[in-house]
Image (cartoon, rainbow, N blue to C red):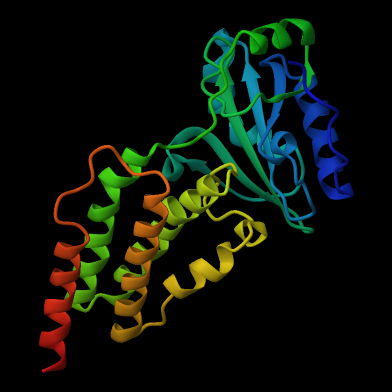
Length: 270
């Protein structure tokens, strides 16, 4: 299936994309430029990032990677950049341009190793567009989604982490753990149950009923507030799990975790 027409972009994003195409097209390292993220999934607006994939000739990929910061600097006023190891993608260069500020992700891949895409990328420029489209036609695109057992195998480990930090009095760590759980488990499960694409918390305010169900899982820097948020997080997970039960539920949960955190809470009140 070929790409649909490129969405209408805000002027700032359109100007940057024009520059990227112009610079890429005269650089002998590259054979194609692909667009991903909101350029494919829709909903592009003035606050969106530009998610771009630069396809390098295989025998020049090392050169492209070594010079990627130089390449990024040729695109405009580069304020800051870092590589993407922290998100599990070392081929990614995360860039901030401006002012006005614009976030651009540049992912560098070799022609013989395009990797995995959750959705078919857009061909924004290519030396041989037909050949690139044919390669994309032959690929399988798998949306990023997890089954019920994936969540269950991790949920109680992650919830126990927050409970342990709460018991120890490490409130920032406990809050961080609950935030992580909301993003990686509750948000995607809410969307899954609503028949939507599981995209974490991105724009979840637009998902019917999601805000009202997630807000009670937030907490202030206070033991009682964190304890209440943990209880509500557990309850919401159990509710969402019931819509698609895992084949192998974790034994003794949630009772064991509730006993664990409540025992410490009783001690703290003495």
